[in-house]
Length: 334
Ligand code: ASP
Image (cartoon, rainbow, N blue to C red; front, side):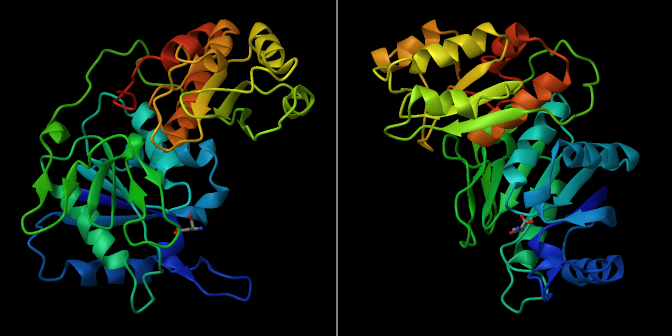
């Protein structure tokens, strides 16, 4: 069995510099470290390493970087993949990879670490061993994220801690597996959404202008209008609770209705991490549905954003975007 490790940057391979932590571990050093890690391991797979040409802090990642990872996977055929990635935007990348690879069960396991691998007390070794163990297991399907002790569905994950060794969670889905002796696998880890998708090989990710706006108590229609100028290609409104907005603020809903009418999809998400957006519940949400906005149901913010970029990259119009937002592509939505 061949496992292809793809190193994209992130804290895991960072070194201190006078500007702060920056990617700096060479290919040879990373290879040596990986070999050392696997010494004496029961995993019999052949592990190859490929470092991307431009290693980045994942806070600089763009949809082009998602595509580079997808292309690198294609160019390096293997039985499974481990992607070494910065933690800051790892859940966005995981969601993006899952949409582009929907229907393909080949394991792609993303991981990273809170501390560089050169730090004495780093979590890098444990996370990479866990990710390789997951990639080696026939139980792992599709795009997942391994961190701390947990194997998670990539497109349901969020970075929930900037410091904890269990820094990722799937707030609205159970973990796929918990590491231990032996690993404990959830029954649902084996059941994958296999609905047929109308696109064959998806078009590559391209940069799209998708805005994300957080509501705050006291936000005015004027401020909202200003935040939407010039008009983006789509907008995610981080509303309250089940998807409610200040419906009594004069003109507020009108701004969103005009935005929808101009062909810009408006997606209503929630500031709650444990959210299931249901616009029909309150008057303060129903007005948004009437204005043509679409709720993100229980998708994470990361999955909602990556899905919009995916759908726009497929050249869909606003009506098609709207329809696909409400349909699961690969388990991102209950
Ligand atoms: N800023 C880093 C990154 O996302 C954080 C990390 O990897 O933990 O690349």
